[in-house]
Length: 107
Image (cartoon, rainbow, N blue to C red; front, side, top):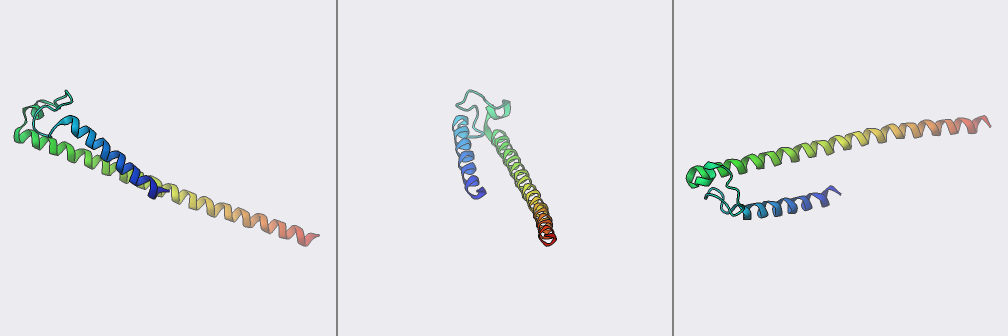
């Protein structure tokens, strides 16, 4: 199921990035089309505006990677929990089957 989910997330994120970059105009080139300039350095444009835009992109890319890593860890923890639960329940099944055998021998 996770194999089907991840491509959809990637498509969604890519579309969101495209939409937001369309509103911004070209990053680091001054105030964008969306009405918000993003701060005085970005509004001024030039090398500093491009540098700040690149740093912001790297920051958000790192944040996204951290979130994906946390999500992966969460799913791995869930898998381990369910495996342990399966083992516990299999042990319980064996215990009950032993009781049934004992009852059959008592007959």
